[in-house]
Every structure is written in C-alpha cells, then in structure tokens.
Image (cartoon, rainbow, N blue to C red; front, side, top):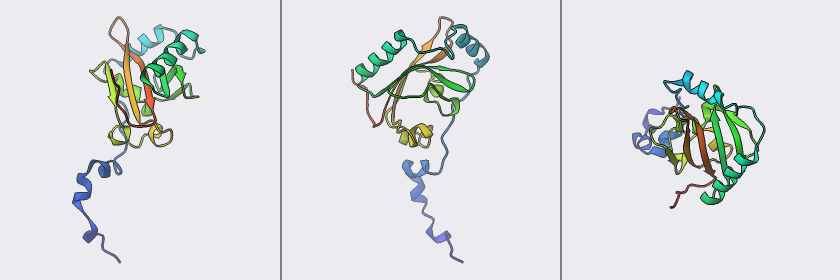
Length: 165
C-alpha cells in the first residue's frame, strides 16, 4: 500500500489559491435584524413583480457607466435573491445561499467590491463563479429610510477588474 505521508507538502497549503481548492464557499450570514429587514423588503411590494422600464433603465445605465456586461437590482428575500431588474443575465432570481448580494447587505461598507471572486474565500467555488463566470462584483446597498438593507444595485463582470473613477 502506498504511503502518502511522504508526499505531504505543508508549503502547498500556505498559498491562498491552493487553500481555496479545499475549502467550501461561505454562504452569507442572516442579518441579526432579519425579521424586521424582511418586513421592510415586503413593504415595498416589489417581490415577484414583472419587469419595469424604470428599473431596467437603471441597470442598463449602470452597466454602461461601469463598462460591465451584467447589472442587477436585487432584493434579498427569505431564501432567494429576487432580481427586480437584470441586464445581461436571463434569470429572475438565485438562491440566497450563493448570493453575492447576501454578503453585501451584511457589510458595514455601503459599497462592496470583489475584484476577483476566484481568490475570495467566500466565493471561489460558488456556482455563480464556477458555472456562470461571475468574477468581478461591485454592489451598492439599497437601504430604506429606517436603515434596513433591502438588497443591492450591483454589477458583475466575467474578468477580474477594478472600478475607475
């Protein structure tokens, strides 16, 4: 029987890229005020509504400004990321547990940027990354007047990048 003991190389695991190959993605946490946040989302009556030109104009414009192929207006619902508007992708929702926007609403920063999701422990093996090539993400939180983070206005790209002023 071969011994793998002699083949173990601890240096291999010191490199971030190698470490991520063996650690699963991190799903977004549920905010401490989730019940109130969810009620605030529902108060707007936008979940499961049809596309609207006003929202579609926003996503089209933000894709143009940021020079990204994908932009979304997302609302974080109980178990999903509902896309009120989507530019560059055919889906209307995605599971909350793989949602970039689910992470964004938990941040203390109003703008969240992930330059290369393949190198980020939260997303490296996320199906949106591995199957749909969502490499770059920038999301601005949508916050209501009571301070509840409802979702995001966000952009994605299929390559690593930075936003420039």
